[in-house]
Image (cartoon, rainbow, N blue to C red; front, side, top):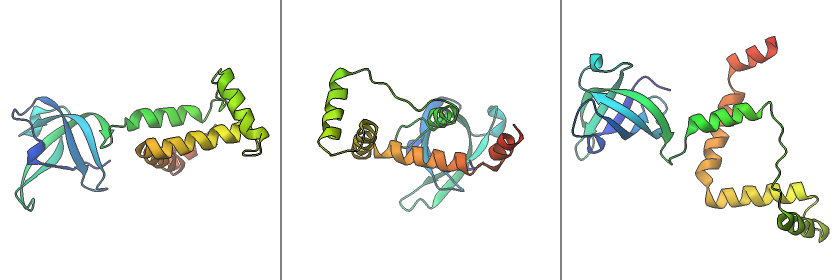
Length: 164
């Protein structure tokens, strides 16, 4: 994460120092996300202040600096990236077996296997689930892909794992 953020004056609350949800952009990565924040005119009004450039005007060419304290974050799609990261990290050491405990689903998946559409019920379930998520929740798949890439590219994490 950056230590400098940008938002539009249109998104700011009326009162300084109040807790609100705000759409902001990470100045370094240009990632847009929503976060629960506190905003203040002066940094000493906040516990953990970061600079916030507030842009205004028809070409967003007018700006002023305020300060923001991020309390918790979701991306612009409303996804909780911290939760997704925690779940992905926990999954690395857990079983990957899913159990739906559904006779109906098992019969339907076995039908697809026995008619030659899939090689196994696991293949059928994976493909159907991922196809559904791609169609209905593409932002979730995109966020998960980014989380996995970040976890795989974390040199500190890899170094700690090699020590164990």
